[in-house]
Image (cartoon, rainbow, N blue to C red):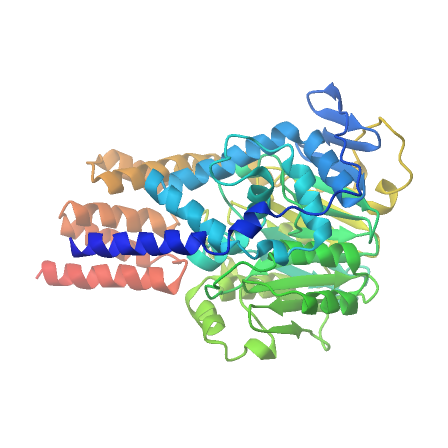
Amino acid sequence: MKNRINLFFFVVFLLMLASCGTSKSMRHQPQISNLNTSKPTVIKKSDSVFVSGKNSLLKNKQGLWELYVEGDPLEIGLNTGALSDSLLKNQEHIFFSKIKDIIPSRFEQKILRQFLKWYNRKLYLNVPEEYQTEIYGISQYTSHDFENIAPQYQRSLYLHAAHDIGHALQDLALVGCSSFAAWGEKSEDGNLILGRNFDFYINDSFAENKIIAFISPEQGHKFMMVTWPGMVGAVSGMNQEGLTVTINAGKSEIPLSAKTPISILTREILQHAQNIEEAIMIAKKRSVFVSESIMVGSAQDNKAVLIEVSPKKMDVFDVPNSNQLICSNHFQSKAFENDKRNEMQIADSHSKYRLDRMQELLSENSKINPKIASEILRNKEGLKDIPLGLGNEKALNQLLAHHGIIFKPKEKLVWVSANPFQMGEFVCYNLDSIFKERKSNTAVSFEQENLNIAEDPFVKSTAYQNYKKFKIQNHQFDLYLENKETVSSEFIEHYQSLNPDYWVVYYKAGLYFYQKKEFKLAQANFQKALTKEITTAPEKATIEKYLKKLKRKLK
């Protein structure tokens, strides 16, 4: 009863909090009175080709959507929304269905909606007007099925902070990205080359409609970025000056309100900076609400640096006496040397392991070229090539990446992976040729087919087919554990045989037998799990705790 009373007062407090200071943000809209607000006319040439004047969207043979839009921020937003209309509505359904899976209770969903209104009350003050205007344009094409969450524009704005909010509030391990850069003697031709995996995972459907956006804005530099329907922020991109941006999440504290979403900051850098110095100047102007490493590569400087930002401080990690830079999910600059959260991230997470693995793979290859970069991004083994089990977050290829990407900034070349994950064909694009004068009502793929990198042979392997079966059975096992159902020994044996090097298959079997009070079988499975490469220190400690309990029970 006492817990219920506490919960009641906590809920009332949240509702009161949510009503304070949110009305202005809920009414706010960008200034568009002096802009052309007429909606574009889209010509549907086929189920996978759409054209509106010089703007177009097409699906190439690798399954990647190629978007080209130009104009002022509202024109870019409206054309993006009009061309990707059905994709946009589908993506919203995918995202919000995931929220329902996580929070099935309608009452708790209502509390979450009120919290988001309050938490995002200052978001509009921290997003530049040009991006608010672009988001407004896209929002005109969003679904009306989610008006209970927020009106179209506010909801679209909120989604740009979703990565940051999830990162800050739940410390999600959905963003365990890995990136590297090489130049000078470490690069095959001496020019800068960068590679990265964007390990942001909602579910398998979320990554199905990857968009390679080529944007020609009225203000700033023309650029490309890999995105998804409705997203104007940049997570991976390169502009026509040969400046690249990628983001890697760090360990964050929980802030009291949303500020500038990290993807909006990186979009601003991508559109308005031409070298590292200008990128740093833009980063200094903005207040962010999560900790993030922004890897900035520059053709002008022929090198890369990390701009490391947090809600309270910022620093730049440079490697003046080296010709390579590696980044995972912890900070490396002086300002964060003694940061407790960063120290905890290094000690407890898989970030340091992946950084060491990239170091190892780069050391094994004296000169990096795009093909070698793709092999590093696709690598599934651990340090010294030990088997990790498929899907282990200690691997560079965790079999969940939204995309892998490779940049050659001086040549204005970029390679983007097709599905699945970073294992499909890496499709090559040349920004210089793409941004030449365009004709109206035409749409052909921009890919440079002769420079594409072939898909990973692993995609056709029995091991990968087994992994796909494992994912289904792994979810099923979670349901069995949750509902405390009885599982056959044949199911457990088959489940473990599908991914025998992965510690999780023995850990979950151990949990099952522990639930059923079959303590010897539980002990054997927990002990087997400890012989595998366990993802994080806290997970290893959990298994060791179970074994201590079992030792007492089996006396």
